[in-house]
Length: 370
Figure (cartoon, rainbow, N blue to C red):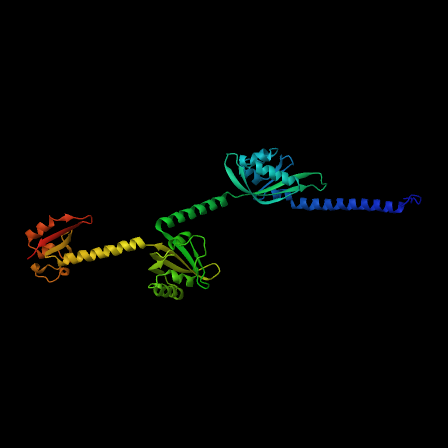
């Protein structure tokens, strides 16, 4: 090549031109090698067989490529997807989101783990987790929206089932006036359910008291028994099961039944899991019944009449001590014996066919004694 000495800067200009030509040739070779590698790896086949949806669309939202899973997720064939607008695959109320996403992609933005709701051929709406970015060709002139999608139907169903289970648990807690707790033995830190806070007259969501702080919430007469059993459960890994009194934040005394078991959590730490149930009303009802039964027992024992109960077979189930006319000294001597053993046949028959039946299949009798 002749060198033009007269051209200002001619040498420099010619060298630059040669360098650009060589650089272009080098890029072509790199592209050729890259294409060969991709062809060797058969990347289109890899994408076609991916277990997630892949879709390529032009800037106007027209689908130019869809792999098997993209089509299958929507209940379509790959051929049916090609040429369709992206809006075809989206639930109607998701179109504003699609518009915002495509506008962002056109500006060069990318999106990761975006939740979107698509629609199948059947009309069923289902959730997807979407990634999207702008894919440019080597020349920079060809641009496509690249979208990958993972079906989240199973995850959403699990989330819904979990929420439903939690709601049922809350309803059960409220109905039974029962809450649960968790205590980390090493630190004394505790976690309480909302219903446990309510049992103690505290607002749900606040910090649960630590083990030592809880002491002040127990009735003074019951504290030693509660903590002695708690320590035993920790050292012997036995069950905690105790009814005791607590003092609510408003000063009200209540009775709770607490059951707990020792376990190791995922970190290997000792943890006690348990429940609290407010049994105040049933406890008071039981106490009242015991008092009533004691009063009735005293009345029965002090009666001058022989008062007793027979079952359906004519066997004595209960009796006061007015049994001297049977030659006995105590009513307990009658328990379990048949009325025919201690009474003449005509009297036994009389008892068997008289008296008042109770719902439990028992007859109550009384007989006058001198």
